[in-house]
Image (tube, rainbow, N blue to C red):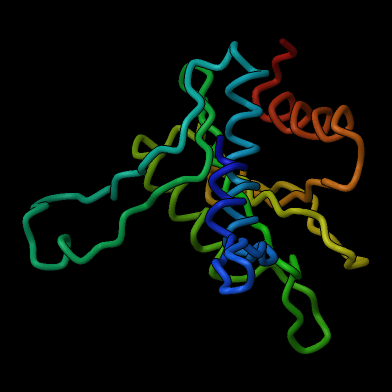
Length: 188
């Protein structure tokens, strides 16, 4: 259904013969389709998970929540939140032309992306259990270097990986399954 929406949304009416002309998809459409694909894959193929959804993370505000600042805080909306009991993995799907940025001849993850996933994880893990992790999941590009790793940052697993979409579906499925298995340690 979403694919149909994206096709129709990407059409422009022309005056030529009353036909429609399809324009190329903008990156924002592909990014949204990428997010939805990952979410629906986990929903359909990982039914053992107690929760698979795009969820909001509440700010871990201590004290008065009725201050003037609180009303200006942005909503923290995850792309994908996977839960198995008390263990949570927040996935932020990233569909860019380039996965990494280069500064001073050094490749790094986009700082805004890292701050975003870190903020999601730390505000979700209000009891400081370490049971909440975060993953930036980039669509693979033609770049030679691609992020692929996890680290314990402040007591939580946070990382970045790359999903190769230019392979048969069964291999894409294996990549997504491995992410869930590596984090939850559970083979369905």
